[in-house]
Image 1 (cartoon, rainbow, N blue to C red):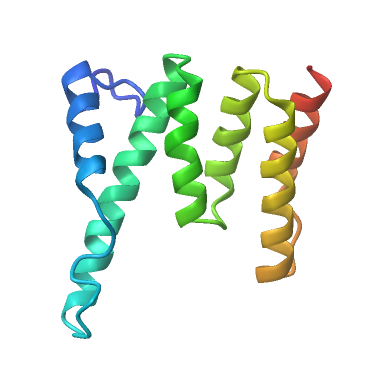
Image 2: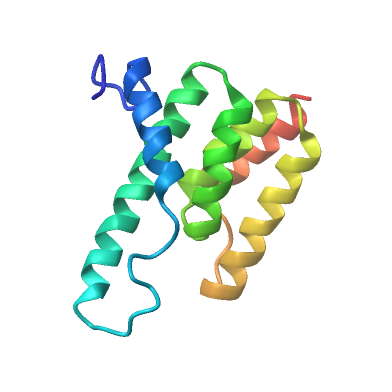
Length: 137
């Protein structure tokens, strides 16, 4: 699927297929059913969904299509609120369109979630990224 081995380098047909697959996903498989055997299948499909969004976010960031990257990254952050890597990319995409307000909003959200859920602060990596993005504008 990747053209040159980099996760952000997808051929256009691959982008279209991943977008189509993401558009089909409507939540957990058989979520209304209370069967134990469904859980692994739900998790597997959710992982595929997240991988597709992850690949597309890289692709759109590489193409400097920041609005499309933001669409996928905001969903990834919503579904995976403790994954700093998604926040790093989301802050960078927001910087790409010059949206300082969104950069601050997403950073504060991450900071709050990490504090509430884990009693931690954001990593030095994302703290530095945030400081650089705010200072650069």
